[in-house]
Image 1 (cartoon, rainbow, N blue to C red):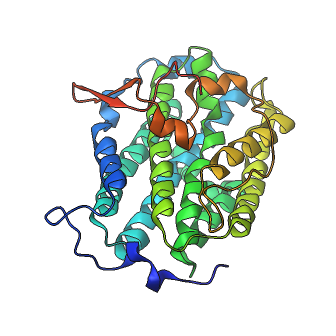
Image 2 (image 1 turned 120 degrees about the vertical axis):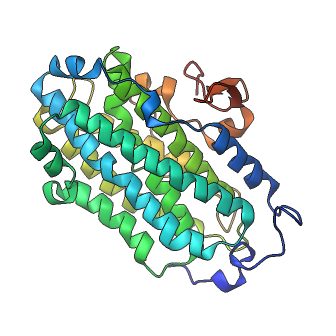
Image 3 (image 1 turned 180 degrees about the horizontal axis):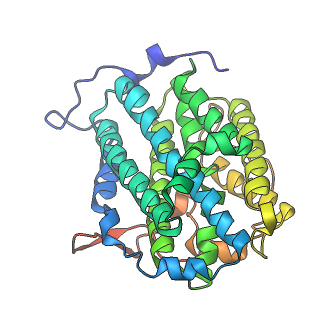
Amino acid sequence: MEVSTDLNEPLLQNSEYSVFYGIRYPDIEAYAELQEQARWRENEISFVDDYEDFRKLAPNVQNLFKRTLSFLSVSDGLINKNILTRFLLEINDVSVRRFYLFQSCMEDVHARTYGIMLATIVPDLEERKKLMEPHKNSPTIKAKINWIEKWIEGDFPFCQRIVAFAIAEGVFFQPSFIPFHWAKKNGIMPGLTTGNEFIARDEGMHCYHSLLINNHLVNKCSESTIHEMMREAVKIEQNYACEEMLRDGGVVELNTQALCNYVEYSADRWLTSIACKEKPSCDKLFFKENPLIWMEKISIPTYSEFFERQDVNYRDRFGTKNTAVFSDDSEF
């Protein structure tokens, strides 16, 4: 564990900066504005056709979607717990707090959206109740939840915890989006795929916000600490992906090697965007190519692409269009 330097971290100290006297971090303030422009609501997505598509799937694929939603339906609550019980009590900067307050609202939208998805494909209430307690049904999901809670409740320095939640929202979520990308590729369940795509893009924004905060820290983690954290998370996620996505056969495009390589490929993409004590970005650990090429069209872009690309209209669900950073036909 890194030695805590939180008392000497400007971002965590009381500041005279405010909306009245000036913004300390203009890039974070602009990013908070971007997040608010990209808002949406769960009741703007239609799920009327999804159940019929779901019924036509093979039982093993149906179970894959149920297990995936079982984890996702509780994951946003864990992220919100960290925001409300740790970060907002520690961070005093007005721009960072603005972002986190709005993110907390969006995490609730995500949770409600996943709840609607689960109710759409699992009409039986008793079955849904069991799926809403994934830690009781799956050791690999429990391991993911335990890892996230360790960083919420543990006495770790802020520089480690901000990296941990970039990893959680990147590495731990990205493979869970695979079934929805597969469904979109096959033109089925448009409500589930649209909702998950909106959520995936929001999670990308949240990850990059963590990286922006990390960039501004005076006291960053060492590269060796970040590598250790990433290796631990990758191992947990590989166990989850291979257990939950391949149980009963999964879908034809997935196998153990492809899933493990995809987790490592995703981890390396994040590592090269995380600043450390020694240099502007960490070195890769795994050097894997993307084995799931069909994921690329709607995958989360790299950190540099996220801020450089401005050729996209991410529709404001209230009737306007806002220039933003995602495109369904961008080549990342």
